[in-house]
Length: 290
Image 1 (spheres, one colour):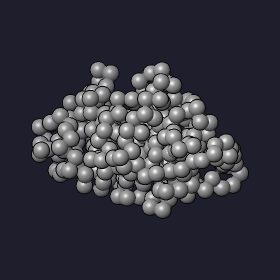
Image 2 (cartoon, helix red, strand yellow):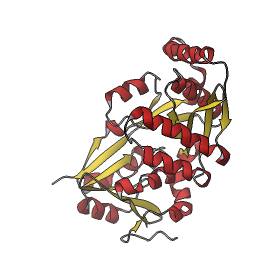
Image 3 (cartoon, rainbow, N blue to C red):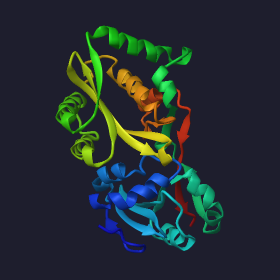
Image 4 (cartoon, rainbow, N blue to C red):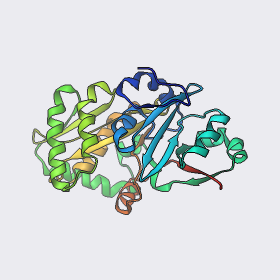
């Protein structure tokens, strides 16, 4: 299915994946939202529509009665000016786009602000894999305690044959949370896993499925964006174990791991900071100065 050219937009469809793969992969920042999997799995929540502007994607969305647009890569000056005048705000602006279009942004009077709640947390994969030094001693102790508490524990690469076990884990996770959370997107992500070019693992405790995680390559292959991580929480330390073991696998291929944003949740922010991020994939919001 072809993606229309600006100013025409089409609802985001699974068939758009092939056409979007290269431009999204070429974006240098590694913004977690700018992968086809993340866009597609949350297409209904945000009513995503898409077009190409001079070969680069433009994504329209809606949230809380406001309209927004996103540009993973720079777009022509005339188009950017039309977009900022037509929609409520410019969302998830990457630093590379800000840098390349700085003078244009000033000339058409766009107010740019940091969107701290949506900064992606960036970690050195080797740090998460080794948990070396005093700064990680609590995490290391939790992983060690987990491994001592259970008779056996193992990791298997996630493939189509293991998807039913992941559905079991997801349903157990949902029961413990007593709310939907991202359950719908997680379920669809598992259903489409073989088709979305993801990479993941399933974790076992005493030969029973206990957790899974998966994500995909971003930023021209430099960063791995971890999209989904679910576990049965009765296994104390399971999340720390998943984090460390999967980082061991990823560290052989990726310099960085992107564990996405905290969405302004203070508890989640503190938890992400305890893993000592090396930095952030910063995102910005743009609005037209009136």
